[in-house]
Length: 374
Ligand SMILES: Nc1ncnc2c1ncn2[C@@H]1O[C@H](COP(=O)(O)OP(=O)(O)OP(=O)(O)O)[C@@H](O)[C@H]1O
Ligand SMILES: [Mg+2]
Image (tube, rainbow, N blue to C red):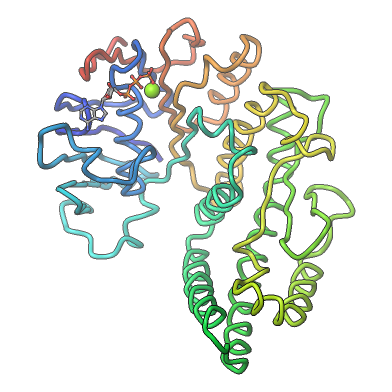
């Protein structure tokens, strides 16, 4: 899939504009604070109906204006769809081919995008809740129905938490909530497990081919109720049934402690994940450069995985990555992106960071205006 063209009006500092993109590699270059990331955010917002910096709609509307609009033509195989988005005050209106869209679920997924921003480099040091959201988004990208189980699970968690905080918690009610939590939680665990099983070889291969072939980079999952972590992509990876079984046993034995602490002590909403290098937690010993490479490898693996498992070719949004990599890895990254042939939007402050022969269209960004160089 690719974005053929975009129309932007009163979005952040950007001048009103119409841009035509190449199906391959599109680069926005310019000095700091000119509007490069805002351009990526316009594409991202159209895909996900929210920005990647702040979730507040008013922040995305140009200062002193009341409404912003973004629309784009998205091509997927032989079909063309016009996506439209209007942001007014705190409200957003989405359109598919000019028709107002009543359900977000019908809209999400028409434009698939994977985003890498410099902040992603720190994902291993981020709070577990951020990593869980990132994982949930990755699994959702591959299996959109995952969101339904996740919504249900979160709803039941909230209800059970209310009972746990009550003066004399009703055990029959807690039994009923536990049964529901296990039902949806098991689906979530299975989906996450299956996802990492699929992703492990992709992450390992991408990391080795672009960044460093002397380490095996693999995903690791940590269940809140288990001491050990499960490393995927190895022969002795614990089965998903064992995980679910351990959780089932734990939930039955934890009732008194949950009541005493007035909180749910186990389940997918407390689990965590990360990446390991040769089995060691990268969070604790990997260098800055290695962590950067791992976070980028994760995104590239996600693209590989979507392509090979679901035939989906997402658009890749890469904010300011070249300045983070050394010249050899930067060149390998460009070669990789060229090879996988997904439409890529990349921002950079300097053309020096680019492998120019890969670039299909070059846009210079200055004070919110964009000039197409080539
Ligand atoms: N709602 C808004 N209205 C007007 N201007 C805005 C709005 N939101 C952000 N800006 C401004 O847009 C400018 C460009 O921001 P952007 O993040 O796109 O810069 P950039 O070109 O990516 O720079 P850098 O290279 O530093 O990352 C900033 O000066 C920012 O203050
Ligand atoms: Mg920027």
